[in-house]
Image 1 (tube, one colour):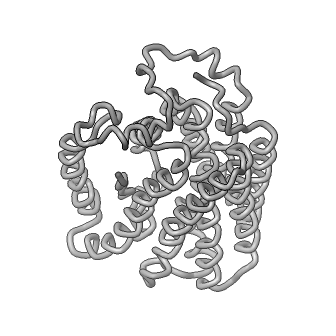
Image 2 (cartoon, one colour):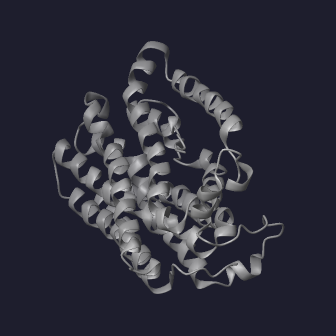
Length: 335
C-alpha cells in the first residue's frame, strides 16, 4: 500500500516563491507520526527479501505527491489564492483516512483476506511476536548501530532540507530564474527521486537475493545516498544556467533516493519490533537538521556565499558516510 503524502506547504513555497510564509517551510513536520507508523507496519507485512522495494514504493508516494502538488499548485494559487493549496490537498487526507480505516490491518494475522500461504511467505518461517508493551530505551540507546541511524539521518536531512527550502531562493538570486516559469524543471527532481528510489530498492533486494549480506547492501546503498548528493552539490555551486542547475539538483535527489534502501530500511533490519521507535528517534534528528540547517543557511548567506552553504552540506554528507560505514549493521540487534 503506497502512502500518498502531499507536502502542500513545501510545494506552496517552491511553486509560488512570493508566499509570505515561505521562510517557515519545513518539509516533513506533518509526517512525524506517519513515518514511524509506516515503518512499523511494513516490518510486520513485508519479508526481508522484499523490504527495500516495498519501502521505496511507499516513499514514491511522497515524491509523486510533490510532483502532483507542484503541477497543480500554481493554477490553484493563481485562481483561488495560496490557501487553496492547503484546502485542496488537505481534503485528500479525508478520503485517504476513510480508505485506510476500511482496508488497513496492523498485521497479516488480523487481515481475513490474507491466506495461510501468504502469511508463511511474509513471516519467512518465523513467528509473529506480541506487540511491544514497553520500550527498553536504555538498551536501544546503548547500541552503536542506533546512533549510526541517528547521526546519519541528521547528516542526510541537512542537505535535503537545504534543497527543499532554499533552492527557490538560489534560483532567483543567483540564476535569476523563477521556478514558476517552467513546470517541467520544477517537478524533474521529484520525478527523479520517485524513479531512482524504486531502482535502488530493486538493486538492493537483488543483491540480498544473490547472497550479499544485508549489512553490506545497506552500506553500499546509503553510501550512494550520501556521496551522490555531495558530488552534485559540489557541481551545483559551479554551474550558471538554470537547466544545468536543475539537472544537478535532479541528479542529487535521484542519488539521495538510494537512501530508502540504506538508512530508511535499516530500522526494520536491526529491530523489527521497534522499527517505529527507531525511525521516530532518527527522524527527530532529521527534523532538527531541518530546523538548524535552514536557520544556519540564512546566517551563512548573511556572512558568506552559496558556496559556503554547499560546502557545509557536503561536509556533513561525508561525515554521515564515515559514521554509517563504521557503525551501522544489517543484523538484528533488538529482539
